Image: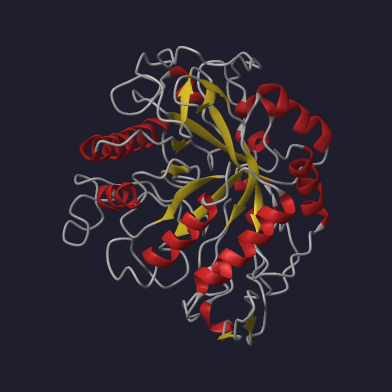
Length: 412
């Protein structure tokens, strides 16, 4: 989602924490607004990367098959479809084969189609922008618990906005401030059987290539490396160190997928620039997994045009196993996510006018999908729930009712 969490300016926020007891985690804002004022891109305008506005990507042949994967054959690049030394990964891990994601039972796999929503990190989409809350992880865990029990998702995307809200944080330093509470939240999601979480590095101070022309730099960073780092002193290996640290944190977590970034460059970078940075970052993750001797996690890479266009990956997939290609759209066109040779997920979607046809298409093609956005503390439109600053009183919006109905219809 192309949105600026600081569009409203820090001055309008005064944050106070209400006492939490009995499992009810509630925050209250004492400023002029309860939610962030959104840019036009936040409400689904073409500037946000709507596929029709960016041009329809080249469309591959639909692949609606769902046969079990008994042999874990090589993926489109000829690399093993699982982690480690090849073959099917341990039971409970996800892996890719051709254009599908599979869930391993230890000997073979069955096609996996996660369905769910986006949630925010402990910044709560800008509401807790100073991290003044002493227990933001408990607040977020309470909200996500209500989501899982009431909406039945099997897939959740959580965005690590470490350079988004005025207060810059890091996974590498002062873990009590951010890394530890976020680790607690992510593990709490994974404690729910059958629920997988896409851990996306939405923003990090080590990223480059942000779209500053359209006023949305925080959501459009590109991972850097030692040759492109914005500061050789502060980030000698660029974003590599953050990816290594994330792998170290979630090395054995079968329910974790890694998202490399959000919408790299907006629409200001070339396909080649994006692909090269994505390939390098996946290589960093794979090297650390191999160093630790753990299975290879699914890694989601992003495209161009606010990641509405991943067509260039269809022509040249990245040379690694267990890579999926992520599309965002408000709404996404069918062509933007339909390819016969690469596995695709929809990392963000909204503004769907004909939900029955849209969901029928996703089901036929078995495209894992994540609706935007589940946060009851701040306006991150399109909002799935009413913004009421309560982690337990979760009231679905009209948009939320559409998504909730879909998720409940496919609950395991």
